[in-house]
Length: 265
Image (cartoon, rainbow, N blue to C red; front, side, top):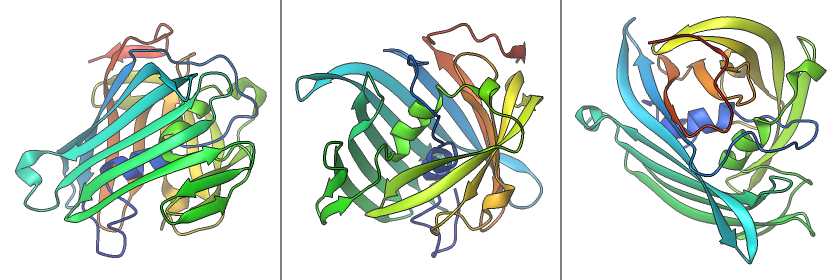
């Protein structure tokens, strides 16, 4: 949540969570989520050996109409705890509209306030022409390019039984008028204990192929539930100053039973 000036625009609470959770599955399957789902995370920050509760991130899903088509509308919001706003205030809101069939993004909105840096942008994706339309122009993008929010939900449908530890899964992401070619490494399965429970989990390590989104990309680790929901339960990563942990705190209206829970605090 706290960054130096060079990284401020690229790595704050919700940006960190959104970017490092993204990876592309080999093929879209039936959605692992549904209308009304809500997921809440707590962000912990460590700079002197003690983790403090620094902020909250939430993701909500609804089923709506967009351009006469059924779409999922996902809103991701992140904020620092008010008592730490004097150090670095974050109030971020991200939105993604994507098709219910192939889960491809049709519109992305980012409205952020990060330490005094404010930005609002809208991106529309044309899947027929493989372009992204922003206020700054029209950009050519790869087929199935992801936005920040959409990629998390698209990725929750991956079948890890089709992969072995060490496999790398590539994907492309459009951010700040650029295409980033990224991949994530599947590390296997293990039990992970968070602040709010213990889970049977799938362990992943996001890596950077090209671009400058991450500084220490090979040190990021995340765990998602080893069940049909594939919900991230912990993200752990060094940042420019200190370390962050992002732990799942609460879930509501899941599509499938959360069978990965070993102990729930």
